[in-house]
Image 1 (cartoon, rainbow, N blue to C red):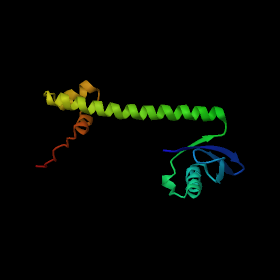
Image 2 (cartoon, helix red, strand yellow):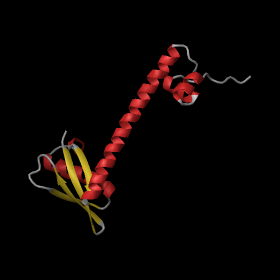
Image 3 (tube, one colour):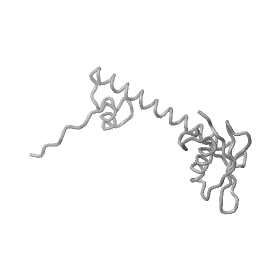
Image 4 (cartoon, rainbow, N blue to C red):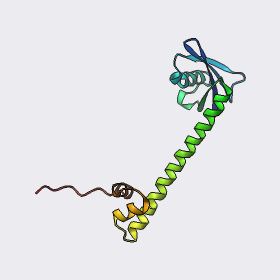
Length: 136
């Protein structure tokens, strides 16, 4: 998948966007009134250039023109991606361990105590739903 690097520089009330990446012989330029609209503007620009749908352009990596901020942002994004991956792995491993403990006869509250989560969370991990409440 192609990745395009976009450098965003504040210019008056607008953001000036410089786009570089594969298939571009030289930088392309566009602008956006708000930074949260920058990706859509870049996608539209690249879609016209490559004659594809905006969703088929590839990855868009927007960073500030200030190099030190761009480096800090890149590090922060990496840490956030790593944290998300670890969170997913922790959930998968916790679910598997909860199932193994259940298979060995541990009660939901015991599993919760061992895993350091509530017994309600164990129920969710195991995909169990509480029995419907019957009022007498």
